Length: 337
Length: 261
Image (cartoon, rainbow over all chains, first blue to last red; front, side):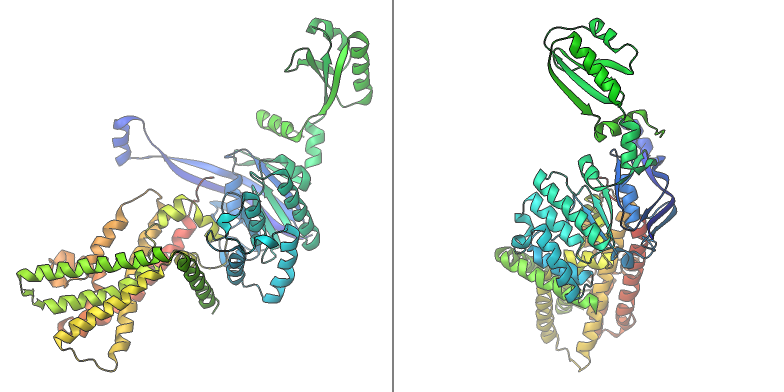
């Protein structure tokens, strides 16, 4: 398979000056400045193959945006190599960007004052898309994103969900092989999110479009991506299958019991002897959670013992969500799995 | 060819949006006219007290002013990127520009154009015709061609200076008040440089060559032969300065740091 993205020991340093405190400090800053070099992206390497959908996640300031900006040719790397679609993004910028599509959720690609279709017409010229290719491809895109009725409205009159769908269409106008999506579903309602997700799956299947998705909404990633790359403090801390992440970290289930009467930890503790499980207190009265390993006989044993010994009004079994897994990983810092 | 069609498409879009805000457009043209009238009155007031200014008559100074308006109008229509720092660097709009397959400066020029300013070409030519008539200037067949080159040279000088200033933002994104100051210095080019002291004259010729936008090229049309060398340097200076500015811009783009999200 072809490598669409090939990043080797990529690094980006920012020099920023730290100001001293107080008026006296401000005067000293005038003459000598303290510079601090911060590595926003610190020696990362990864490759992405054609047709993959990769989730790119990390906390704010983890280096996501900076690395995406180097992959799209906006920023020049301090060191390391980047090959995207077989080109060096910042060196052959103009040729390179016509092979990618970019959606920045917080920034509009469209012109505010003019109708959506006029924006499309301008972009069509900018990307030099021939008429027949445009018609064939865009009719399909417009139909699947259901934006036909919006085309003659100016962008400023659209709702966020409508605008986002138009942005996505604009980014796909030249049918790029690689699509960068930065927070594409931020602030959107569930229906629009679903529509966008289905659409992304569809173009991925139809054109083998490679998609790199950054988002804080992990449900997007769960719905779309098999693979995740996780960043922390400028470094990759996990790169692999999402399912593996779940099985390594999401082992165990939580059984939540709502008791019919007052119970205490001393009463409950003996019930779990010789089992791989432990109690934590729930957030409501008389609710206790048993954290158990994900094995059938343990789960049924725990439930059996608890139900036999106490009056129960409710039982729920939770799987640990991806969000919790990721939160745990960030709290512990490193990945060992 | 691609650039020309993109340019025309942008112009037609621009016209469409501007025509929907007709009052706005009218106000802008009116305020431009008023601004030009105030400048003219200033010249008249100065000459209310004296007949000659270092050997230049009132009508000659008015002619220079008229000439200056033409390249300045072209500059104002296409290269008026004084808010580049705020709009593109601080707000991070440059990110968007850099993800499109057209030269970044060309895109910004297209986005920031203000075609109303071109109205100044008409006022400028009218002022020149008026002053030229009073001075009894002869016009040869090749003068209009020379005029076009002089105007383009002057507009490029202006554009070059402002592009250079905008490029500074790539290295330092702190706000500066350098742009308004430049507009003031630019105005010095409208008067004969020999009324200033040597240092200022040198600066206006070689460092911030605003003299090539007004007085030098006009000297050709006024038949002031002692200035002909400078007059014919105008297109050369324009191309050189503009080329240098684009060169610096291209380096600047690689230093772009982006705005934080």
